[in-house]
Amino acid sequence: MVYAAYPGGSAPEDADNARDVLAAAGIPCHIAVNQSDPNDPQSNDYSVMVPGARNLEAASVLAMQIDNPKEEASWRTHFEQLSDDELRALKFEALCAGLQDRLARLKTAYGDEIARRK
Image (cartoon, rainbow, N blue to C red; front, side, top):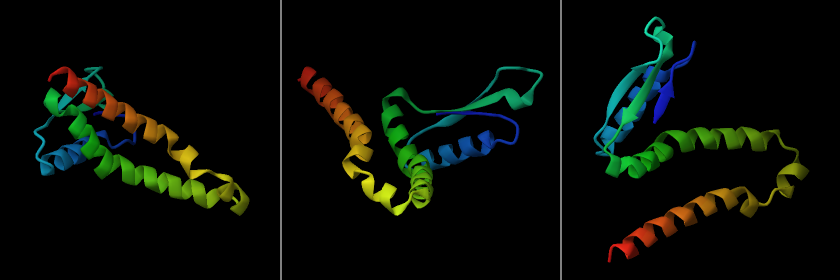
């Protein structure tokens, strides 16, 4: 996960938070600071590095602990702004189609690799 610094942003704190979440989940990690412009400390990117074999697991942990709560808050704000008719016109299955497709593809890719190695 890469956190890019920008004026007023919180990249260092966000990277520290991600590192803490991963460490609490038992996933080894460290932060690598990449400076794209040596004359501008605001140009730093903070990469939370994990062992390659743990990359998907780390992404899942970060999604559950950091990204999904933020996404939920965004959904709640969006739904609150809809009229009653607009909200009721939404089809839950259509809202979840992309997530379900992503899950199915991950499951298939994992299953195919397990089967290939037997």
